[in-house]
Image 1 (spheres, rainbow, N blue to C red):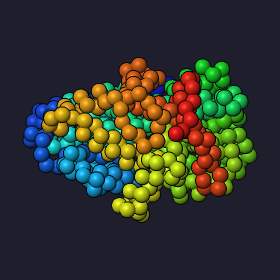
Image 2 (tube, rainbow, N blue to C red):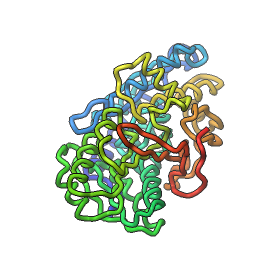
Image 3 (cartoon, helix red, strand yellow):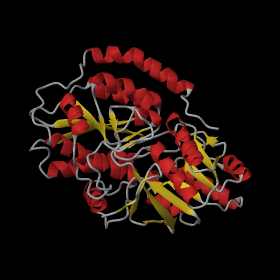
Length: 410
């Protein structure tokens, strides 16, 4: 059985961070420079905009740029513009560490907003000692869910996968298998899957793992087919996802395949469109459903400011992260500093999510599977069907942990 573990590389990186971070932050303090009352309000977005592996998400940068331009065009935060800086972590833990080191060292940066943080263990020391918080975006792994300075918009990878397993069990699956990329942030979700399957009375099969840099998925597909699961849940890059589905179907695997469509842009959806029994799961409505006010506003902003960028739920989440930050900053009575942002994000009682989530009482009050982090904004998932390159959903938000009442979209 797969257990949550930390890779040796990640452990070394964390230890190295612990030695370096106190030196880096000694001259930084835990707040931003200036009086916090005038001039632009600086934020940073971090994510794998480029990568030497099989995943790259420049749409994160584009969505942050579009959201910032949109907020500023509407008057900014009480008349003050938001100044966005971005850092490409290249899906590399060492580079991710460097990005957050830069954020911590730049006293003008009051928050990290949106993005996709795949190496939460590596960046944790910089958040803790600098006082920075991550507002919105998508968390990855148990460490992100447990970090008191990270406040993801989406329920996070472990919760989404728990919800996917619960959905498969609800639809009759007994044996469930995880096909995953071998990264620290994605390996941790195995625990959530195992818990969901165990609680639902099913059997959690030994997972099949593949290197992040491996484009040939044939061997992995062979292992999945040989295991004969009733449903397989994928945690791969978009390219690996498409390849593995094709390989499994060619080898006669006919059971449902669950895909975390948070990562899928239109090109990825089109590439998967010829296969049947594909079930998507994500934290918010499909990025193509303009009947949802927040989706339409996102697409309008991207059309105006970043028309050539791909779009997916990661981009929606980062775009919304900028808007959430703006709402939080506007609630601050006094200077906008790292400390005041941190205090405000922990005490926010209401936020306008533009229909992207159920109507939750406050932002950070929902239960999470890990007791250390009881502050997940949107602890629900959306189940979709994928056919012909189109995502459709039943206009219902399902509790990510499988229990409780489903909430119809408004």
